[in-house]
Length: 140
Image 1 (cartoon, rainbow, N blue to C red):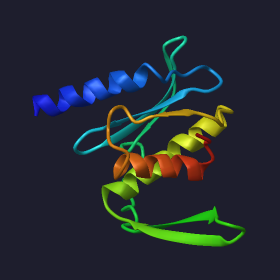
Image 2: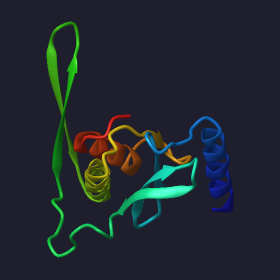
Image 3: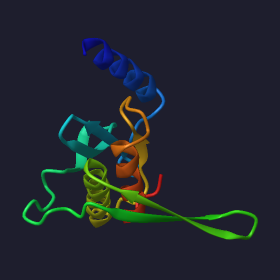
Image 4: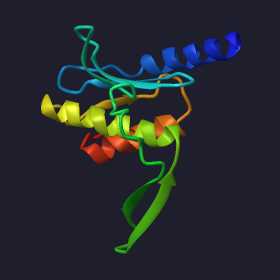
């Protein structure tokens, strides 16, 4: 277990040498544990967290929808294609956290961010959080 964490930390350091956030374009940092997922918008110049969101903030009274369909439209040689996916389980929660952080960021008039996956692979919950943030209105 220790080796996996060290590898992730090394990847994160390598990513952080290339990425930094400012007040106008903050860094969207993701932390994923076994049970929860967290996201923050960070201004690296001042070392401050501007906005944060996690799955503990979501309404736990109502059970989350177990399936969410995402439609993604792409232009391919003047032809519109619609691709739909069905998300389930923790990925649904990550998607909702992405939408929540996007909503909070837009309230603070932040539209553009730099995505920091923190050494995690870009799939599963991290990818769902990014897609939720994009659907919520953030640009990156």
